[in-house]
Image (cartoon, rainbow, N blue to C red; front, top):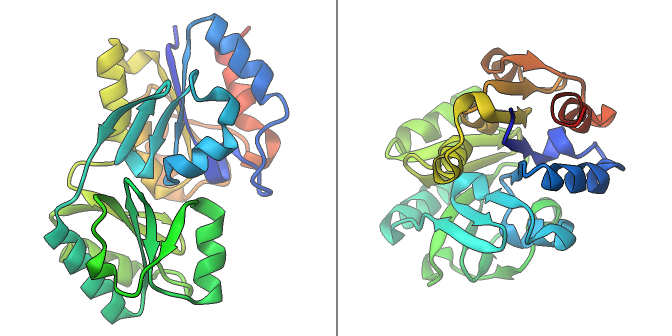
Length: 260
């Protein structure tokens, strides 16, 4: 029996218009009655997720910032704060490369790039954003550094960042964003922590994803689904393939396996 369902947001649960499935409320209500835990797993901050899931904060579990911040039914379960020296080295490297940097912390999100492209991207995924002249002067406790490149990252650029920051987790969230967290922090380690806390095993977990930062999470679930629109590496990591994010595929699979 499936006891935990975890799903990515963009490209997975949400359609291309960033909208939730029409039957989301009905499905969640039925899952709660069956005591099945539903987990929203995203690179987005909790502030942004709170806005979209305002009516479900005491019912759902949230893996935020790719696992750096976990909230379980209204209670903060885990926060992985980065060393300031690590954050400073990331800022210096990325600004030298011409990348735009966003610091995700307990008091909000912080940026120093004032370009229109970056402002538009930030607005898609983050709230409570603050401009600061020098990111090195930020005194907030930072748990994720999000790095935007408007041209889109090449494989060479991504690999270079992985080598430079080999002591951290470096993940491509989409074509334009790289997220950097403490070593061992990812959606998979976050889901494992939730499963261990609840005593739920691999064969009792369902997970959905579409991009590279979802691979670790899919590895925690026997019922692991890659969307038809997913990156090929995600499809290879999943045990099953479902339809696209525009076809309400997450809800269809949930109903098929959990509500019939």
